[in-house]
Length: 332
Image (cartoon, rainbow, N blue to C red; front, side, top):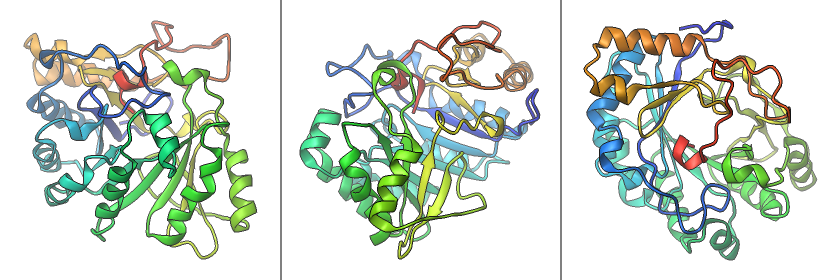
């Protein structure tokens, strides 16, 4: 369906858990965070019911996220059930890759279309520092296992952090040179802990890549569900992408909404407005009532974020409240 600004909203990101097997420095503190109780998290049946309703409103693409989605048992069964819903064309996954090697086969059999693997460095010591876990080898094994399935679209996501992993950007880009994988460089979102980290803008990253690999050619067309701008570098098997929400704001073409693990529907990442669908489900509301609630939430999606505006002028969210939760509790 179209929101109040004429944007076609067709993409739903679903956080299936707030738990994670890593402790990435920009996402959560080393000691972890207070986790939701099992009863607070949407069941797979509840998620499926929401997706069925969303499909009637034009949602056709689903992204499963966390936390780390692969720590939740039976994820392939959820994926298979979502793919069976009329109107759902694609179900994809974002993961840190650590558990991917052992699960990728059943996920592909269940209908997984694409997998995004979060990988901010190829240096073991730096990986330990950023994630507070010594599991780079497992993540790389997950990547290699995913590449064994030619029907699977495989991408690597790197959050760019000046002074932290800028020495890794060229090395990570080399994955796209050597393998049929797209490497995307993502600007840090100023949410929670991450707002204090200096991000590497698209221009800074591209300058590093151009020095190493010559100029890239900007590609036209759509290569995924989200807002990435893609380039092709000479001799590369895969593409290089940039997701630059801060330096190249793309709110005018935003096509997504988010569902948190505890069932809160968020029309915009920055704002805390939205609707508690878990309460709707568990209080006995009908599908027709929930349909209307989701429709209204999509329609009133804010025009844009205000991350670059320190005074947050022009907020269009009804509550006019900035999101205070960490990314780990929202869904990546």
